Amino acid sequence: MNIGYFISKNRLTFKRSVMDSIDEDGFYVNEIESLGIFKIPKKDFYKYFSNVVCSESWIQGTYSYKKIPSWANHYLTLRNKNNSSFEIEKNDSQNSQEKKDVDYVGDEIRAKIREIGKLWYTSPNRKKFSEPSCAYWQKLIHEWANDETLPLVVRKETNRRGESIKHPSGREIIFSDNSFATWVVCNVLNNILYSLDEIKIMLQKDEIPFMYISTKELKEKAKYKKALGDNDTIGWRLCHKKPIGFNKKDKIESMDIELIKQHFYNYANPGNIFLLPIEIGFLGELQDFINEQKE
Image (cartoon, rainbow, N blue to C red):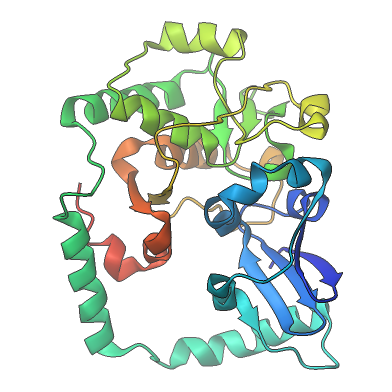
């Protein structure tokens, strides 16, 4: 488990340097002395705390809530006085197998989750992708993945957003958060269709975003500096049907290029993506709900 750890007193505080230090699949842990331990997956942070990352305080390095919002209680756990971040991780590991062996949810609740999934799939409020546009971008992403002259984009080591490396295979790899996949979705929603030649020109002109917001620190290291900014998915959470995490702590340089190509396709393929309003975005983590999003 990849954890970024921070201690504060009576406030929920986000440190940008701590958040940037952890991978997309890691956790931000804030030990709040008066309450307990706040622990949030990094992939949730940029969705549920979109107001934070757009603030001047965040750009300067630190954002604090004077009063912890009620919805943050979902991520708040009780703190044992003798626990450290290491012990939390150790206890999680020791108890994980026991938890897997117990079905706390049960068939009745799972059936209700599937029912909610079906309700959302048929909801008139659901953002729908036009079939021609979605099919075009699916084909484009597939061709992109197999074009050796184009870089592959990965949602990994997001503290390196916009940076580029050369894989041992010779392929360029660009690090991103979900902003690149969001850019693809926005093009699908607006029926904007590019050719691979146009994509190459856009990359040369730095017109494709690989970060939600651009900061001084990111710009100093990034080859690609464009930020996503305002877009058609504000207020929505981007969810994937097939998981896209590498589930490995290995550096991208040591991974097989075919694995990276598959990750890129699943990550950016609009056929593997659906959108949820942020207030119910957590449902995008539940497999029984995901299974009902059939397109």
